[in-house]
Length: 291
Image (tube, rainbow, N blue to C red; front, side):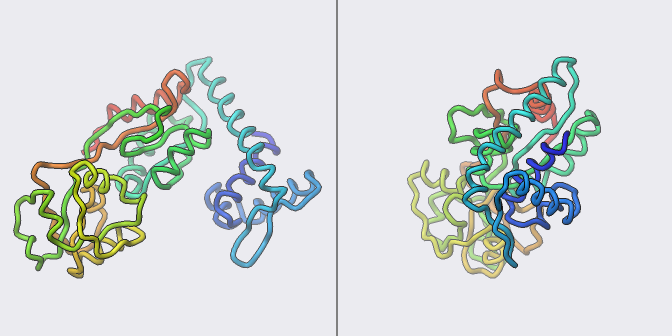
């Protein structure tokens, strides 16, 4: 990678994170190295690209105008690098993967280790975000693939990998805590704690399908807050089993009757448009033991 490409990668990461220190950590560069790279781009452009403040950096109008052009250039270079490797059937290069919080916490470290052990010339660049962030990242070329629960973007392909059961959680002293299972429509009898709209896509999809309108007591920012409030017996919640695997709260989990689940899979551009590296990663994930 030449100096210009490195500068462009740094420019994009600083723009994404809004912080030079965080960008340096994400790219494994020093903070001074990132600052010098941005300063060099600004000298080359003949204008300021970022507003600096004590809380971070934001793009100037000139920086905003440059952003899509730099992103397009980096995407094309990334595609070219992967295409060159594919000509010799060489599985190598950088794979940009999107993931959401519970999958990242449960599976990503092990998955990345096992894949790069089998394909040591591959570097995985991980981005954590919402389902919408991941879909948009794949569509506009910032990501090669991403783990999701289904897709809403029709142009994308989705490879199902495993089912993640949806469970009702309560505090140990709650009236439902001794239930072996719970009909979905019984949830409307109890105060529900949920996440803000968009983060609880899987839960809301189940409610929409069942035409159920629960009594929502609190809407919180993240699943950790939801589980914390449930542990304090402020209400019940419906969450995927995967979220419980890293939780430290004292909670009781109850399966639904009939059982409900979300399907975790890998989203990509249409397979015919993907590279050898992406197709290899899809095949690896399909054969992986998610249990």
